Image: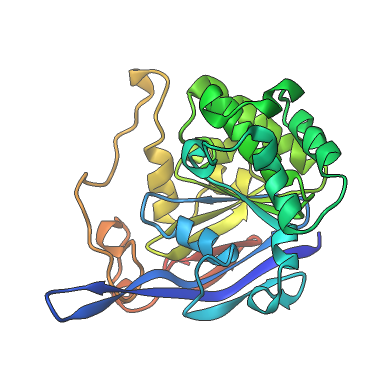
Amino acid sequence: MDTLLRVKNLTKVFKVKRGLFRKKPFYALRNVSLEVRKGEILGVVGESGSGKTTLGKVILRLERPTSGEVTFEGRDIFSMGKEYTRMVSVVFQDPRNSLNPRMKVKEIVEEPLLVHGERNRRERVIQAIRRVMLEPELAERKPDDLSGGQRQRVAIARAIVLRPKLIVADEPTASLDVSVQWEILKLFMSLKEEGIAFIFITHDIRVIEKIADRVTVIYGGMVMELGPKGEVLREPLHPYTRFLLSNVPVKHPRERRGTEFEEVEYEIPEEGCPFAPRCPDYREECSFRVRRSEVNGRVVYCNLY
């Protein structure tokens, strides 16, 4: 399968205040490397603060990397012009915040077409609204007149109206009721069948299980493990992946498994493996380096391999 987007050795450092006159570097991303293939859903999963959203922002050019590169079809995304936003779109977490409450649905969906000077806008807006399973009559309404699921479908219609090749979906079901989440996931999967690739960012590994082809597990700004969804979830290699799976909510209390990790806050170390302070398989070398290994076609950053 052809590579659509490639992230190579991506690092993003922010300066955060430490005292009145001092600033300290905070590594939001550390040497992240991954690729998105044409027509696939790549899941990016990890806890809050793991670097998932920062990764999405760099790919969307909302943040510039400190080092490393991101290429789209072989071209550096920061050297591309407006054509990049035609091919790469986004669906944010909360449509209540991402949709302009003063605009009608048809105006919201039409906006990308106006930015790119497209013709036949009215027809394409209605096509996009229908494609996300909304009634065309809703085009005259405003976001506050819609349900949460309908608002997210409007956001998806806006994302697909330019017929992009890649959509970055950042926690797109997190603000929705459970009954609505599955309908939105099915919509994403049907769009994939039309050839659109997705980077699906979430903290919920259950969502990854339903929707992704491959999964990248990220923690402390670093990739822990990357591989086909079934293999990663069935036989996780990294202790952090096992931790995530051990803490998935269960349907019945008797199915609960004890966790090996204390429920306390851990500071991310500046060197070595970010998961080291929480890891039951910690080794001394984990404090200053992490090895990259390939195990049966999967990539894992861990000194156990």
